[in-house]
Length: 285
Length: 335
Image 1 (cartoon, rainbow over the protein chains, first blue to last red):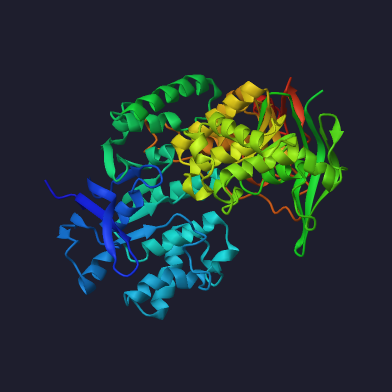
Image 2 (cartoon, each protein chain N blue to C red):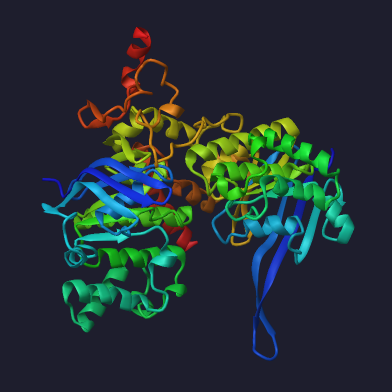
């Protein structure tokens, strides 16, 4: 059996709580991530769900070494990342990219679309100015963004178009793994569907592996092969998407699923009752 | 007579780029004790409609250019600012999207509730404070008598929204307008807040306008639903009818674009995205505003030329389209 593309084991991120004016004392730790393990096979998607503060973004950042984990191991394509430093870490990072939540905040407003997408190529010294221009046009076309607008600025575009720019930038270095951190939660329903379809097509065409982080369980279901549910820094349930959605094992997963508003008024009363029942179970647990 | 009747409301924004027809001919009625859901995507005019009812839009640039808003028989569009202050917060309560900014961070939550009770009901400090504790209890804040002197930052997002709701219902308003009340909250907290609003409405026979972009939220909470698109209501029906038999192509498309929780083939399936984007409201098309994105708009059928009116297809079910779902086979047959 070959090794999975991405394997995280017993990952911990603890932030010290400091107190004191002249002498800093550490009086405790916030255990943002506390022993998280998961694997993603090449070409597959792991959906990481949980509510705000559950540690899902911190897990992703620590896994990519954008934030140094307190302990644990992260293996990517057979290499241990936690011990890598400097140039060798930068080199591996090419193959791991992120698409951020807010396309209004994650694109530099002073850079043209072309420069934003070309920046990763420039940073890693790939190609010359001319070849980069061609690469950028190809990337923009790939994500359904008209390359004729390469010289415009991000504020001239809607949220959905901006997210396409963000995706083109993430694809620039031919990554194997893309972390999608709430990529559609700032978008309207009709636009959200366009971006989710694009991400699916790209995965299919380029063989990408996704770590897909979201709080919307319906969105995650359609994107993921496996699911991990996080709460308070730990994974409370993990398994094939189908199993987690049809027969959730943990009460927390069940409460999350029952809380999702469903566009069917006939289910309302049943679901409301279910929620009240679970709320009492969870608070007494 | 309905509690709130909005007729042909037009709210325009006079900007340097041109006149934005943000709300362009909206009719609404809200019955006593019922919930009307207004659903639509960003920029469709749902919040501007609510703010127009409360007369909370800054003038300029915004102006209600025509229409009437009658609340309990009283015309709100002609009231003076002073008279309006007695309506807002007293007879119509309001809950906004972001509980982080709706509360004053420099005042304790107790004083923010007491202020409302003193201003509108003329209560003295002592009774107002006792009432504030009761209200906090009613909205589900544990140990209300201890927490009343805490500042907003000591509360979580869901708890803050409960405080905002306590303020909104403090004077037992007859109508509560909730604009995306749960959008900033986590799903489990969202469910709690929606259940709370529903319980309060029932107990107090309070009417509610629930504004949201989330189809699931309206389905769970509203008696009637109005779907807005590009400044107009494009479909209006009971929640049951709307989700069971949607008529307008936009409503159908919105429902189809939603990922669902219980589709075993979801991983393989592509979502039905709606191509294009809503029209510019500075010069809205004279024709059907959805025509450019509508799968049924063909050449020569008129919907790219003139604007369809909101018509009643079945008792209580209105749609603004030339191609409602129930007439489509016949249209295709004659074409």
